[in-house]
Amino acid sequence: MQNFLQSAREAALAAGGLLRAHFGKELRVDTNEKYDIKLELDRRSQALIEVLLLEQNPEHGIYGEEGIRGNSSSPYQWIVDPIDGTVNFFYGFPHFGISIALRKHDEILVGVIYDPIRDELWEVEKGSPPCLNGLPISVSKRNQLSEAFISVGVSKSPESIDRAMPVFEKMVRSAKKCRLTGSASLDIAYVACGRLDAYMENQISLWDIAAGILLVEAAGGKVDLRPHATLPEKYSIVASSGLIPL
Image 1 (spheres, rainbow, N blue to C red):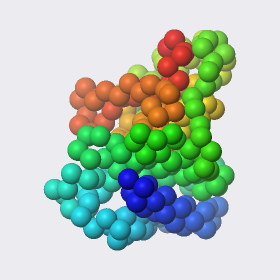
Image 2: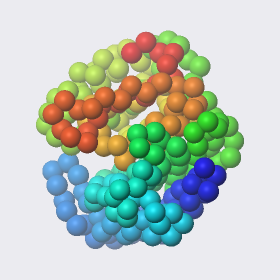
Image 3: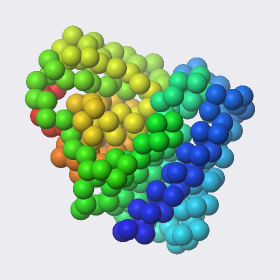
Image 4: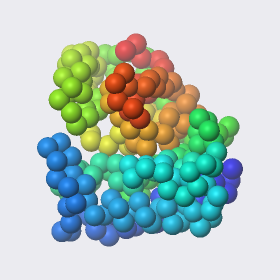
């Protein structure tokens, strides 16, 4: 799997360079929805990642917002989010990332998350310790909710907002601090390295969290991932150290 991890690392760093070069500059908007923005740069970053991954792994498939590219019948499938935190990126808020995972059937084998502004690279392969910029990481040792630092994600629909607000209020009242950051991949990476004690969201896509799931579990944490009751290819997730009562 070293070759797979190297492929993911190289693609994430290349896409990160592209995003960094355009951060804070005028951007072309493809669609501007009520709660979301899609940029032309999303497509360019995705295309760059696809080219690099498929050059080294031509028999593989790639799964993301644009559907499945490459070999749709391959048991190996890359799960890609080329800009997680597009609204943050568009508004010049330096908190966004690139998430790349590889699964074989339903088993995630490799995960990489890259923050191009802070130049922080989280990476893990199944059965090996997770790392941040080459150094081993682990989840937080805090075990009291009153001392916990929590992130609650809120998706872009009235239903998900209505479901998330009571959870956010509970965490605001119970935890030391609670945040909404706008980047699921970085939130879950922060859980893996102990910056956050938990991240939760009730409506999220797999490409936002696939790499982070493996990171958190390899770092000693727990992930509760459940299919959404009504929306196909959406999930609810609670990723935590496993030590905080939630």
